[in-house]
Amino acid sequence: MEQRKLLRVLAGETVFPPPVWLMRQAGRYLPEYREVRAKAGSFLDLCYNPELATEVTLQPIRRFGFDASILFSDILVIPDALKRNVRFVQGEGPMMDPIAPHEIAGLDPSHADTHLAPVIATVARIRAALPDETALIGFCGAPWTVATYMIAGHGTPTQAPARLFGYEHPEAMDELLMLLAEMSADYLARQLQAGADCVQIFDSWSGVLDEASFERFAIAPVRHLVQRLRAMVPNAKIIGFPKGAGAFLDTYREKTGVDALGLDWGVPFEQARRLQKGGAVQGNLDPLRLIAGGRALEDGVNAILDQLGDGPLVFNLGHGITPDAPITHVEHLMRLVRQRAS
Image (cartoon, rainbow, N blue to C red; front, side, top):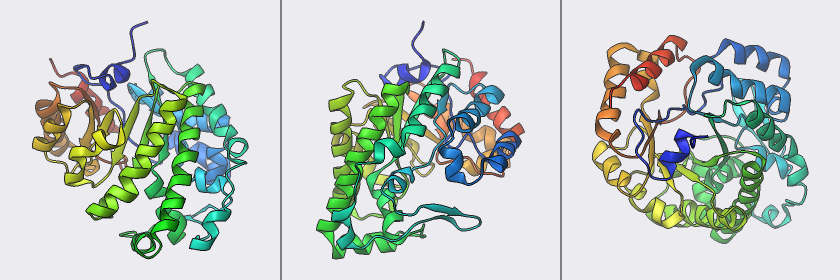
């Protein structure tokens, strides 16, 4: 069997047209997802139900034929495994009990393997059901991003509670981040062992950090995560997605050890081409172009292919697909990428 296109690109090969997948490709923009979600119970119930989570993971593959599938789950299953009372509130998003500095030493990861076993079962089911040519991506949240929710108890516009926590309690923050890094490495290793081809680390909130904090809270724990993961799975292929990292992206791959860099839509092509000289890049279409469709979508797709198509590229959005993205526009995106002559 020819190696899956995504893995060829992650190994540094140029493939044209490039492999395509979209962050949050299984989600509310699909009517078949909404139908499953309605009967699943809570959002976490869906994440922990291997049959239903497999079904929603496969839905966009059946509909669009993406080159890669990504496990349907959530980054907050890790704090849920730590018994932080995670719940998803309609109209408000994820909520949990905010953690205080003195509570960190008492966090108990010993039951995480059992708690997360349904997710690992989902990975195995997805791999068994996917077409041979379709790659399977596992994932976790980066320690910093997961910690921001644990500290505030919910999402915030600039993650000020977590940033302040890091300034006022740096040792407690380091302890929390290292625990999350180790748990996440173990979790990703189990995903790879269950059939995932590669994994992605989502650092959705790295863009709020200053230079020193980025080194301490974004780089250091991800480096620890990557090293621990590679000790268990030596050939693990890893995509790092530090959203909003800007100039800090230039050394992120070298400092963390990830294979590929996920780029948000704010990364200029000049920087993206420079980053691509060091290995694969992934991205970076503005998700709003997908909503707009027409010329905005065509110009965005063509610019990425023109600027980055002659190097190792995984075509993706610069962040997740939104619930109001029209299905016809996703179909058009796939035609634009797939029908380009090399």
